[in-house]
Figure 1: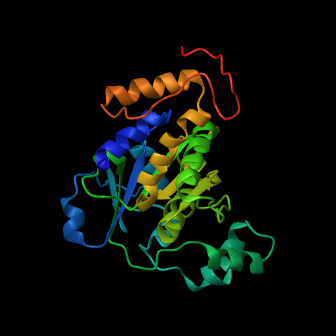
Figure 2: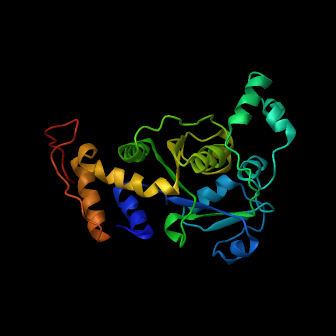
Figure 3: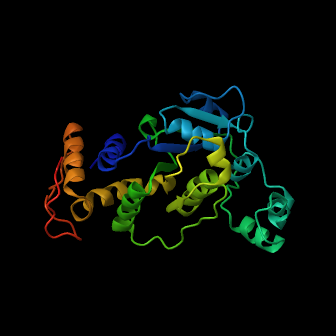
Amino acid sequence: MDGQQDITKRAYALLDLDRRIVGVQFIYEKERFDCIDAIEPLRPMYYCQAVASASSGNRIKLTKDTSGCSGSSRALGFVPPAPQYYTGESGMALGLYENQQVAKSVALKFAILNRPLYGIVIMPLECFEEEPDVVLFITNTREAMRIVQGYTCTYGLQNNFCMSGNQAVCVECTNYPYINQCINLSVFCAGTRYRTNWKESEVAIGVAYSKFAGLVRGIQNTVNAIERNRRKAEIERDLRRDSLYDLDIQYGRTYFLKNDRSSKE
């Protein structure tokens, strides 16, 4: 059975990713936070900016004082929600909802961490020595399809995707999968697209770490059914490179092509 690092290497081999897979860990004690080898910014930084930085290879950690976004600070548990948040007044003030009742219903359903948080660590997944709480993928829609297919192969249909187009990275991709121990998909929000360098073609997926190994196993178990010859060859090459090749790759067919004549090059 693969260990934590080998599961991560296997994920990179099975997926065609331009960014690092990001791990997120919630920290509730100052002493533990201080011991973690990551950079705390000198000035407040948005949580989604930290995720973007980690997807480029950096190690970031944030506290209430260095979390620069009021929305993610509220969502992640750095500060409690104000009463007007739950009444829908805050949402109406942003101009995002037709009426206060809709704004209130969204606020009540949003995944908010109620336990007071001291800090949060955001790093490439392979940098974690301990298990993180959530795993985030930032990728194109094709690889997002493979991630969802892998999850479905192992765990079955995810019925309750939660998407609003708002608070994409903190609520949709971090809190929701963590609280519900599931997978969730996000098309981002206007705020994170403004604050970071996401490509217009990119989407985000968050998954509880408890489901990560099974997700990766599901991606591997569907390689023969889904991937064309060129991708199969790349996957075989990368698995062999990492001494993880234990898959009988079958070239020349998929579930939708009984005779795949595409090149391996």
